[in-house]
Image 1: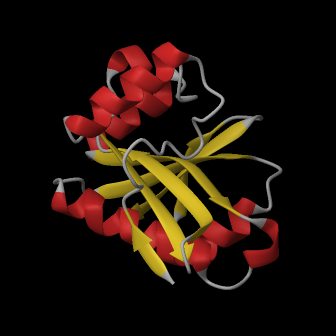
Image 2: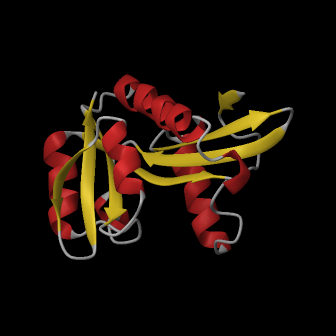
Length: 150
């Protein structure tokens, strides 16, 4: 399995997004503010993830950041993992862990001190992030912000 940046023109998780959002994503990728990674085996995409190295104030609401979460991200110098997907037949095989690890390396290289993820309170992902060393930082009835020190 290989973890790498997407191929030219590939925008995992944004294929069905409006054209303006895809255009903005490409701009953010070019300037290094948005990082995408895919897991591939034999040319087939098994999973993908994305991360904002820094969440611009204008995008906070779009990526699901409540004002308190955005303030915490800024104060903690945290990058925000915004999407993590692994194809169902490939779950439980370490692909999600490898993708998060790749984002953690990229976040640290960009100067982030934490890698954060927004998790809905009833999501099974809470156990996944906990096993990776993430800890709950803040939250409300709908979602929590978890982070991993880098």
